[in-house]
Image 1 (tube, one colour):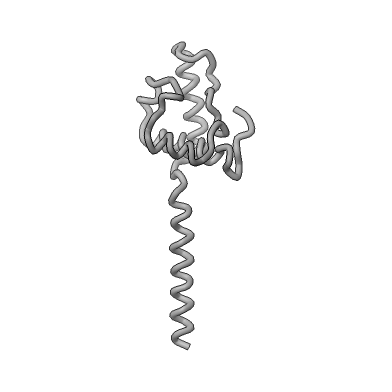
Image 2: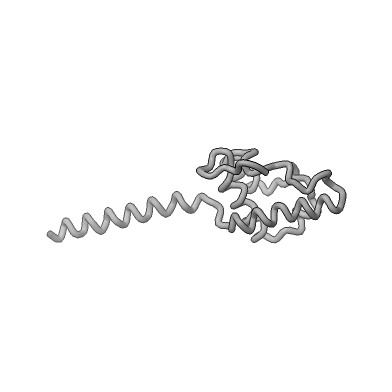
Length: 115
């Protein structure tokens, strides 16, 4: 009886530990705030005249989740243009934008359908 109980506890512990590691790979920002911030960056950039349109030229579905992960790991935001606006973003804002782009990437369960 004691062995069965120990086995059950260890099994539950293993399940909890393995499911927790899969979630840790996802960005921890707020994707709803990220969508708003991402659009706000381009609106400001368009008003300054650096880009022709306030609509971001990269949508979340422009890349896969792995590709977005690489962009944000390297902190290489050149392809987004609007370097002045990106340099002024806080770490929290960047995390929110990352969450938005990652969670709606081309291969995500909920890809963005339009810009």
